[in-house]
Image (cartoon, rainbow, N blue to C red):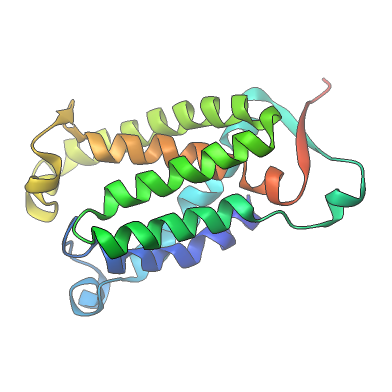
Length: 199
């Protein structure tokens, strides 16, 4: 969990691509509006990366086992690099649609992971659903306490007013795709596989 959190934390800087095209929130010390990213982004990235990385194992009571062989001693980073490459390339061509670019990057990274490690496909699907539901619940709570949150800080042009029970569709898809990709990043890059825990 900590490994995934610390790997995910630097991605808090991704707000540079999202402000102001996707949203334009207030932040501590007004950093978001001055520089395009703030402290909150790094805390957010740290938190969701760690949760997404372990949600499948936690719910399914799974453990991890190191895969045998010489390849298990190497770091396998192809899906991670593809994720970064696709996002940056998409941002170059369509910088006004950062969330769609991020979704495309998550999907490409997940597809490559599934192609290279078919044993992780189930984990990606289940973890994506669990994390998507979890994120949807948290966003719904946020809406309940701050009912003008979306109208104040998000771009309505991006959402086209398409929401599920008040939660923008892009946010739900982002949670599903991001949860799926990040849930297997540790297992793939470090050659681990899931095993059932014995009672």
